[in-house]
Image (tube, rainbow, N blue to C red; front, side):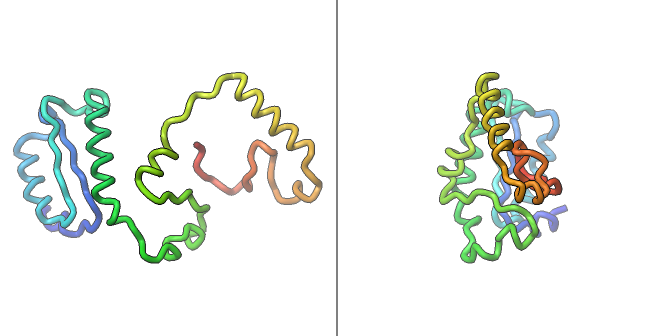
Length: 157
């Protein structure tokens, strides 16, 4: 429905492969009409590709998404960072980045650890466990391998 798109207040990027069978040309035209109602909506059609854009043209898709994040970066700027503190929502804070480029550098894929790297890290953690004080054991941590309380479910990365 056209009025549904009007309620969207954040940037919206819709990407379709030109040869996709999942979205007909009529549906695309309808979506384009609806998109004019959203203040920050853009539709990109990638020529000569179908539905699986992340497989058939990952570089092109990545460039489109990166450009979109750069263009819309100002939208996500918050004048009062305190209003978005995760602690207010009873969640742990995530890292803050000064720009999209800084975030992309920090979140880039990491090398897959080798068995030796894993064994070395586990040995360090076991040594830390052996050195932990009795005071720490009252905190509720199960082991040095899990330095968070048992009820904490965070991101692993």
